[in-house]
Image (cartoon, rainbow, N blue to C red; front, side):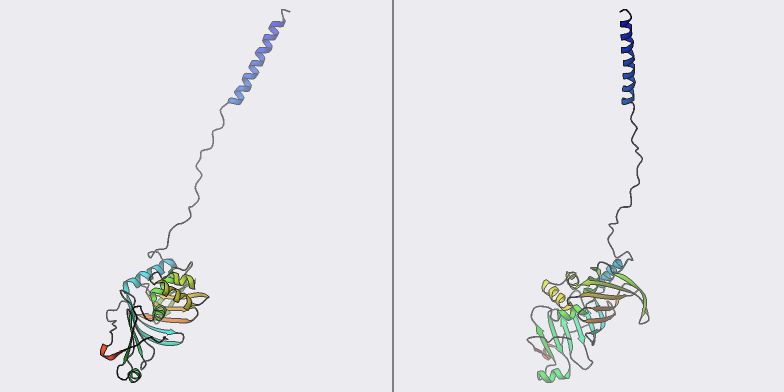
Length: 267
């Protein structure tokens, strides 16, 4: 019996050692997590096109600024097969001179008034006055002005999702860059924030149901030299003398004008 107690103590001591070793194994220092920084991937670009970059969008924005500064230009146009020429002011007020034939009637729009005539046949028809005046408080011939206006076309091109550079070309002995933009008629009209809702609605309707394809030829100053718009009709407009101080459009003398009720459609 004397030997039983030491044996029990030895067994207890061995158990304590084993338990201590097991505890040490469980509570030993854990592996330190790897804190090495993982290089972050490139963040998605949030840069917006600006007039200072040379992406297609940036160049078209630069063309918008050039038009803002110029305010006026001379033009020659082929609208639905009819050739015409004249001058257009888009700021600070709308002014248009439009003549389709050298000996035919001339249209002059001065803000909310329009004069049509100036030719011999109009004088004969009116019995003396060579001009007929139309004024109803709104800008007349807005549909024609919107077809000719470079501001309208370039605003629509700037609203396109992916305008693209077609390439460098020669146009009338001038090196130009040719850009193309495609937009829906609804987007084309919605881009015209300078127009009232009724005029935007009329513009969308005139463009037709399909897409509108805009071809823009810009010179070294990002000025619009030629516009081609393919929609319900195909129009081509060439612009010269941007900002020219010699461009002038005068109202006919009131004594040479007779009042009219409803202006005829042109072209």
